[in-house]
Image (tube, rainbow, N blue to C red; front, side, top):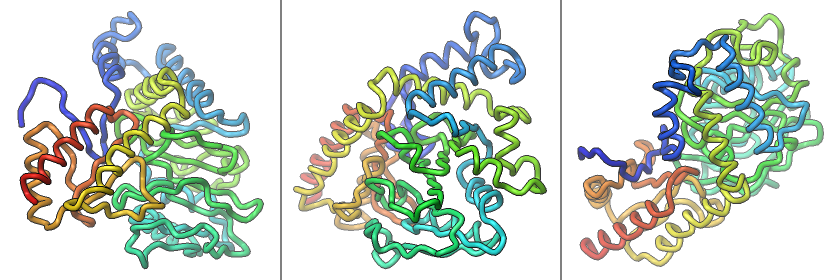
Length: 364
């Protein structure tokens, strides 16, 4: 499909961005703040970018009420690099780390951790093929755990933790919140560290937001490679080397957009409403089947199937011709997936539901 206009983007990531942010970025790529130079060209050592970075951090701290004893870091390499950096810095010799396995990304995270020490499965949803988040009270934690790692939302299977899992006292909870960061209120103080790839709810790909408690910054061995130490980013304000300046600028603009839309509580209400439109329809449909357990459903990624793989293929193709893109399920899960992150518009979800009704009538 070729168009000069915008269409509905339900892709899992890189995902839809707020239209007002994109419009502002169009201007700022050409000439930002009357400097005569676009944001893509400004030096990361210059005063203008320094203001952008400072403002982005301040907006994040304000939006999520980040405590003063936490650093706000911007790190390259995607969330997958954090699968490595976390155990490199926090998994002490002779101790273990506990992982809550609720999908493909947490499985990848523990695989990396095992390269650096003892990493144990404290809870797993694999028996249900990751269609449900197991009860938090079934987790079995190690006595010597350095940290507990959780993936808050599972994009591939459409499940989501509804709240932070309780962990042993004085054991930091480390969260991969890549696909639901700032989609709802969050108590940062309940975590030792939160990390999130930007390309779902924060901005373009290429940057990871890390919120990390000061004591954990200093916990990492000092003989690690420079770029794999959290203290490098903390000590240098994420400017040890040239960072992805445009991605940081975009994160700052998106966070302002969330602020102006009413903040995290308002964003949660919007996301609940959008997800409700889809789930309510799926629950009454005799044609489609939601794949996630009702109590574990994600507000970010709604996964569903039609009666056959052939119908699934036809659905995705027909939806694309109607300007509803990104609906093909992950290659490991099949079916369909509507990713309805913060920037996904309510009217696009309404259009999707109407198309689903039409497709059901034609193929039942």
